Length: 425
Ligand code: AMP
Ligand code: GLY
Image 1 (tube, helix red, strand yellow):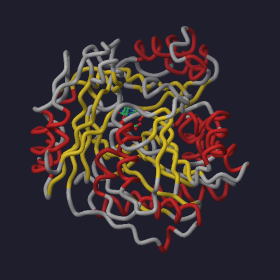
Image 2 (spheres, protein in one colour):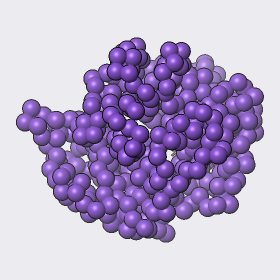
Image 3 (cartoon, protein in one colour):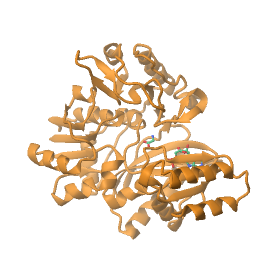
């Protein structure tokens, strides 16, 4: 098979590395890819959201399967466009992708199908949003969210109603997140611990991946501003068997029944951001794709050929698919550029990559890298690399990951030193 992977981050590098292990795959292209992906795939300079050019490329090269990493092309309808032309593609269609592309849509669906989530109101009018917030006690903790896609930045946690009013002004009047802020969702603040649960869905059936936990804040002990994710580990012991059963019964099964009732044929990966409080799971968010960095810890644990899973999803036979996972742990430490998650530096030369890659039980996934004219690998994004260690236990995986991290250096490199520690306590 000739496979095209769409996207350019650590998630896509992890997908490419998994796909090359398939005896079914002869050649991989990646659009647009990065310097690490280029070691295994032919990178083509087409942006992930340029659906027209991706279609032309697939036609010209005779691509057998396209796999979409990021949410933007999915929300723009890449799957609908490919299916219309009878090109095989893995991911949900535009209607299904609203689950991530509109938080108000997701909240309405959860309300309708009685799926546990934070209580909320949504508004398209800033004055009405403000009046609602003013009607609450001043010390109410709220979370104000831009409805649309904002690269993970459109969520503002507010400790007082005054902060919530500022957040509404930023989203709806200053339009800090552009068109994503036409509508806001204002919801109650939930206490608890977060977990990321991803599943393959074929329209009616689903198959769970090992649960993971992301580390969203930039500094150790969950301090500092939110980022796209500074590291992850899987499996997350927080999601015990009995809790997983609860998630299936109170979230996944009603949601899939809701899809069917609403005429949504959801196929692909569904990512559920969960908050667990006193043994009760509720939904923080849905994503319509593999999570990043979660994919960098989950896919290294997959035993089954990923192509076979994609085929089972396509054929609607996930129910009988035998998907196997290694009984191991994986920990991914993200190495970020100086300044991240604010404005960050680029073009720093990265040293020690070869030494790290050669280590046992280590994979180095590139997120924001490029090559300079001398052929050196340089930084080209906020999150630069994801260094994944695997082992029989989380402790061993942590050791493997941080041993590899200690080999790598670039100017201003920042990383957390506590990734995976929560799983040990
Ligand atoms: P979201 O993109 O909706 O998952 O929000 C990003 C992050 O904001 C989540 O991972 C949580 O850490 C936090 N968050 C979102 N909604 C809530 C909520 N209702 N209560 C507490 N934290 C939240
Ligand atoms: N790790 C969160 C996300 O992929 O959106």
